[in-house]
Length: 110
Length: 114
Image 1 (cartoon, each protein chain N blue to C red):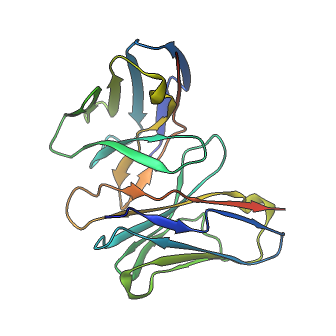
Image 2: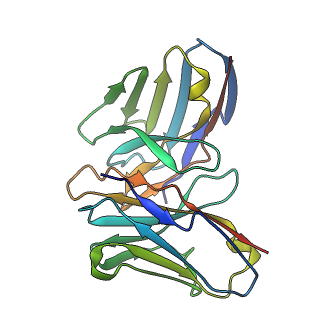
């Protein structure tokens, strides 16, 4: 069974600082990897998808990398903004399901 | 493309009652998933459909839970004889055919069992 650990569990940063969120998997046989954000009481919004043949993906201020050999992924958010405050998830794709950790809860202080 | 929609958005019910939730996936997405999320946790997989076929069910899906996807379009999730432990956010997601399996989530249905 795939288990996902996200570090740090929670962090607060002043606006403008860069954010680094880490994700590790017990089973490195990950097919694809998606990073999501979730605002309180809302559904999940897909941020980036790293497909099985890729090592990283970029969208605007966001960059995500995947190292399958070590079973780790990192989401980097440059120049954080208050609107980046949310919980971030990095479930691994496998066997027709996503396996989620508890998330990284981020607060960006104006 | 209007995204994944779920109805109702909120449901309050008394213990022992039955409830049914609906999910409308993005049109032409042949894969549909249900997840459950409790406070402070990540979503947990419940079940997966490819077209109208239910291909996988989690052990979390007890006998009181049933899901259907008639005609491979919308899906319903029914919970019979609700218990307080069923209180959670129920999330639906869909993905297109093809190798990416990228999942798109709906806004969720918040269930409160009193």
